[in-house]
Image (cartoon, rainbow, N blue to C red; front, side):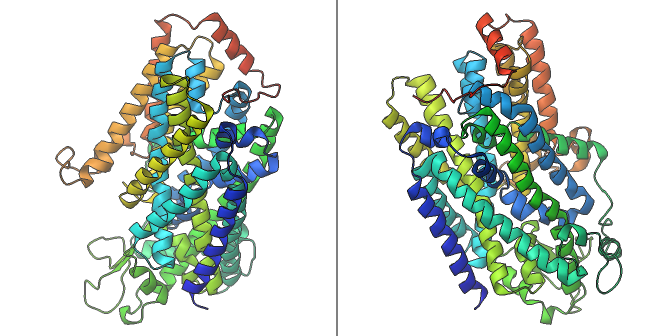
Length: 572
């Protein structure tokens, strides 16, 4: 069977599974909708957390970045892996002990202020929409290639699917759907990696294959270094980024993790604090399987891509190039009319342009693996993107229905009305997310990096100081969140968005020029500086304003002893 037929079969079966689970586990109460009733087992929650965490950026884009950036791509690997460890060990038990559904709920109660809650809601919506745009972009890329439709059409299809099970099932439906999605995505990620590792090195373990000798002689990484330097690129194992930028991007990804609302809420779906710790441990193991494999997939993909395209006749291009050209994500132009494809660092001479986001999806085709493997990877990419998109959309709907309506503007709203409001908010959020998926401000991992930077600059300081500082008050938290978020958004907008919008490029006519970055820090890493501003402003303002009430200080003291069930208290 051809790739299209296999794709319809495998993707159709997985979608039927997801929808079936959503119907079976549909939410009947706000507690079901927000935290899956609080009765999920640690193992299932670990799988769901891993699926929530391993988004389109992890599945589709991270190995693609490593393919093209080599050593520099490791910042995403280090930042996202280290970030999850930070979240699981430093924050999760304490937030679970506090017993609130959402980060704005924590901020509102810890800082005894509706204003603080409102600022936190705005931050959560900014972070979540930025993040979900990357997921919808990933969905569009998968559908555009494997169902042979336009990216815009692919995004719309993804919107309909995720809307169905996110709106119907809430967190309960999403949790059990994500268990299935984890199984699909990890199987889809590992199968081609094992295939290609065996083909290139004879070793079935991709992590070992990365450092092994090729069947044709020579070590894989040495060959890649030689091939890339010959073409004018930096060696695969060398870095071209400034050390300060590597540090700031890694830090932004790490601490941004700790402020991601859709990951934090997962720790409220288990019955006890002990179960939250267990599920965090399970999730770390499940996440490590993919993250330790990504460097191997990146290297395999780049080696095979160079072997099948560089200096090859354009008239006999590999089939995978022709397939992806239809999506507009690969471009071939014979600039010197010699009939050969020249892939070189010099942009004026380079004749092959490849979107970084396609490398994982195209990898099985480049290696000429069976068609069912190609279709399986498509299903895995969709599972990764849709699982995270669903979690993010739930955060948005919860922030609006629970934190804005129930806790701020209409406290007398009934549970049924709140559930309807949450579902309506999710519907609107899907539409907005779809728009940003069709018109993204960058490639998938780059967009997601912006979301992590925004989370680092807005949420991390108020959460960490809310747990570990009894002196931190509402004035400091509000000022810190506003300063951190506004500064980070302005920096990203100035260097990334304004130059790409024709009517606004007068704001920054120099474009995204690294020479003009503050201290050499890229927009992907600026969230770390925004976080430092947040910490400083929060600390200074809290020193010159009244301390929190005694009962809040006692509450903070109690949070730091993560014992007991810590049952979520935001339900009715």
